[in-house]
Amino acid sequence: MKKLRNTILDAPQYSVFVNDNRKILTDINRQFMDIINDVSERQKSLASQIEELIRLAEISVTIHGQYTDITGDEEIFKLKSLLAALKRHALTDKIHIQTAAYLAGKVDRLIHGAFESIDPELVKSKLKDYAICPQNAGNLKYRWITFTRNGSWFIIPYDTLETIEPEPGSLYSDDSRHFIKNEEGSYEIADMMSSPAGQFRLPAYLLRIDGADFCYASDFNGREIHASSDIVSPLVKPITEHAECVYSGRVRLFGTRYLLPDVKKLRA
Image 1 (cartoon, rainbow, N blue to C red):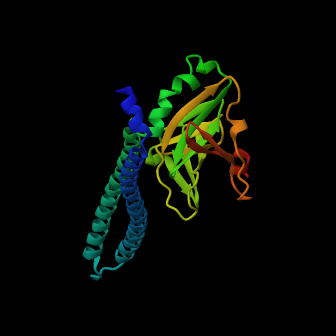
Image 2 (image 1 turned 120 degrees about the vertical axis):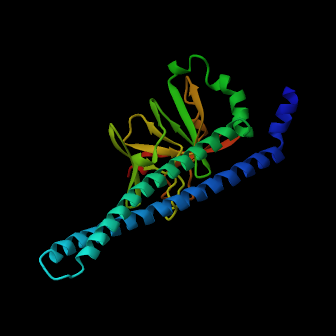
């Protein structure tokens, strides 16, 4: 059975099958997120317009009150009451939209988790975990974390690692930059391989490395590598075709190609 399992894992058709199905489910869920984000932006605009209508209605009520003649007093009071009801509905809609975003984000994490047990690369990686992450892994000097984001794999060395599962309400934007806010403060989110014009998607995880003032966005956290010596750096091949590249280079480990982010360039 073990031999048959390895044969299946090594078959290129199986890898294509798994990746195609994962891509279909992920793409559908990303469409959910894109539409939800669009609805959220429209809802913000609607809420702002309702607030302006209420402000105008209050001014109108004050002016109408100065006259003894009928100038539409009853109608303006009804209008103000109707606008107040619209405001309450807008607040309810906002809660529903945030809940929808949270559920879509959770589905995204579940998709990645479900495919963890059948992805050929991840399964083969787990079979080798004992060799690269032995029982005394916590005492080993060199450590790396691997993760995926926007269809690419990344690898980062670390001394300390904090993994955060973000909720929609904890994220906010400032122009094209995205942040997460928690009890300790705000941290910028490094969204690797994202298009400048692309829509920001809620990541499954945020990785804070060595107490940095920013976090890496992750769709799926892969294996951790622990070793008594630096086994990764000698294998890194520099990227020379892009002068402004924010990566130190590429490295191939256990059949998978990883990009190694350059922290200095990211924070420049």
